[in-house]
Length: 161
Image (cartoon, rainbow, N blue to C red):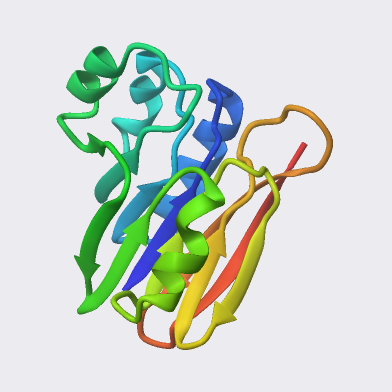
């Protein structure tokens, strides 16, 4: 199963469109958003996804009630625990809980955002993924991640600027 992991889209509709198109082209089965969608109108594009979608609220998410409604009740307070393809995954926005969640031994994958810095690594037996920022703000390129649950390998995909 291929899982798309994205974070910190910050209303950047152009980057969201690119990511959704790439998720479709790669036949992603589920997308996890690690927070900071920001505005409900982002679902004008996220709503075009032809796969599952789950998200956690980030620190910049505004109208949480309308965001949740527009997402079809698929945005949650953190931590979000999912089981996809038999893999137990936890998603948070801020990195504060990444080490304790990784150390717990309860999850095969820990996903987080907030830092805008892409990262793929292992902490003990847990795969830790930060997809970076999809929005074209501040320094650096727009990125997201793809996780293959068969191989348990993740890669960062660069969307450019």
